[in-house]
Image 1 (spheres, helix red, strand yellow):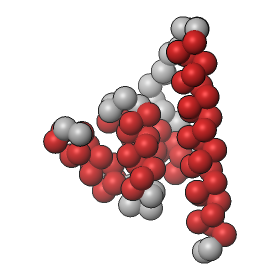
Image 2 (tube, rainbow, N blue to C red):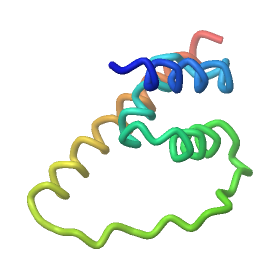
Image 3 (tube, helix red, strand yellow):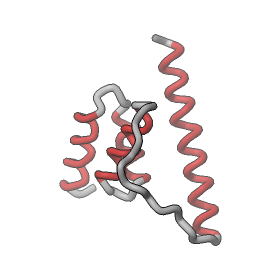
Image 4 (tube, rainbow, N blue to C red):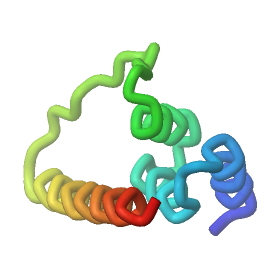
Length: 91
């Protein structure tokens, strides 16, 4: 991992101290190391009233890569939801 990516992940962890550090890393990776998109994603996850100011266009690609990515995204979402649920059970 590059120094720039490490610094960005550390910045995310600092901005979102209540979010598990592994979640910050996963979100950063899922957003292809785009810090701004990662911040927006973490804000939307941690603040139900957050609305992004930018309009992100929907992907119009289709094909095997897109369906594989959707499957990976679904698996990540399930994993993150299960992790969040288990944390709330022990609070």
